[in-house]
Image (spheres, rainbow, N blue to C red):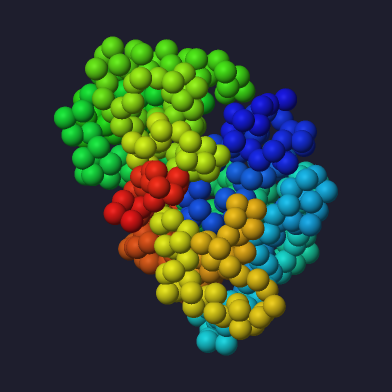
Length: 446
């Protein structure tokens, strides 16, 4: 059993049994699309999600679901009602209504390259392994969809059924030959060079002696960070690993203080906290009432955001932190005219559905999330499928998606590009700093 405080998991979730390795993975999940997309659900549900299953080989036709006049798409929706039975009470909006309204509007304006988009829905309970497997089989084998939007465990679709997905929440390590998972969420190895260059341009490393702080789970990312900083000609004087298991928060904090003293003695005046150590660093300094308070950057905005919320403005060691996301903060993404147009379409079709923006939301009630996720992922699907043209197959869809350069999607904060064997978007880094007045992370200059 793992301590909830190690990953800032809400107390109501902590009452549920869970396995340590999965929780650690989920607790450090980086939100790549926005703070409000379906990926944010992962952090909240981390304690109850169970691993999906992957089988070798594809059991469904690769190019099913496409006719001269229609394209079948699958939509995997988290069953929030079922999760109430295990103490998780969330309202992230109505995904079915959002997708129905937006596809209906899309079809009323010609569909995708002349084909109507036909959505099929399944409710999946991520706390029950059989539910994730059966929902995957239902969409691919019974409904014979061509593609699936935002499944929690995309590996079943990609590998077992050779079905592309968009916005998979928990992508696992899969062979390169499986169907693509197109996402606005680049992996750490791809995003770290972008954000570190942005920090450097912001002056974070100018005339600084840098120390890299990482945990055992972050070794591979720490190597990427070290390599990037070397290319940026940043003076890295010391790298230190906190090897204490993340479950032992007291020992983690003690080790953080030991590393802080080593950094201080080495003259480190800028710290790079890699991955989950974006939580351990400020918490450790606070618990030890450290006199060492250098400016620092956190490579994992999700871990840091979770801790900032739990600290509630009571950790002074947050006052000199900088982090970034590959997409703008929720408020900014929500106010994108394209997203507001989507919201207006959904409100018009389903006036009784509550849809409140980020400013009027809480961590457990984010009714705008469904609209934002549907708006973004349907836009990605439509753009790729339209680029693929009339001969729409898994192969042509994948090739078309990877060919996209400098494309703007709703709420993405600017142009993004995919690339060969790169079904994830790379755009700019949106830098955030801590605002002591609000006790939150805010955009630079915001």
